[in-house]
Length: 331
Image (cartoon, rainbow, N blue to C red):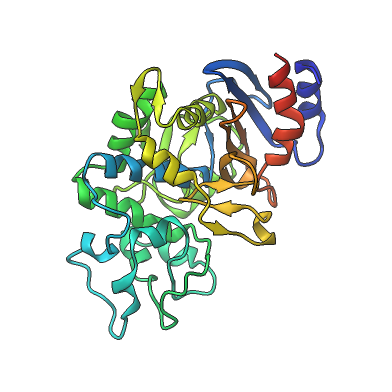
């Protein structure tokens, strides 16, 4: 498939590819492919939904590298000494950072209470109120977006810095990614527009009323910068000769820890990053709308894909492997 053929396939798609707005690829450290659709330019930012979780895992690694946090085995409540535990709640005392990173933390809800958390004045505290429960810690994988907000609170409590400042200074700037600003009237209409708006966005990160970034969703990136992040991880945390993340964390974060079921394509899960194939080193950060950072250490190719909101589109691993990689390998 040529560049022109791939462009036409995406441009004319009425199906799963009809919401793609950018595809970029880095091979052996060089940007070799950039294309865009539907009013987006190469450097336009898009809301990448749950790829944000992958970025939070990077910030957690930076916090560990800097010594703000000692270990993923630390208990969550160590970082919230003023938090008042609900009467009768015992499980929360045993929940660790590791549980949050692997999505094995227990919660008291059957389905995520979006309205309750997203209309509160402090989303981290609201998420803490959901943590725990009578079943105890079972080790069961339980995908949640709201619970990841606790990680942002932990990083800020431990470091005394805002997550957005850490991201700008220690992650984005070393990779040549534009400085991000906070976004958010944080009301219902603004949240809805942030999710549904199909126009290019500024370089921003959604912020909840207490001033902390939303940890499970809400960062904007262009596919070009997403491919940079993937390449940095392929290089074991280095970019352009500069150490961004420790090699130990880059490996620990992306190694498979939890086997997922059919709902998640039978992939494996690391620390908020996926391992799509059992017998492959490929890893990915994946968000709704088919937003993906895809990295293959063996072929030394990293791909970023952005897409606007479209229901029931989750990952694009198969599309990347069948359509994008053959093109990139031929360039």
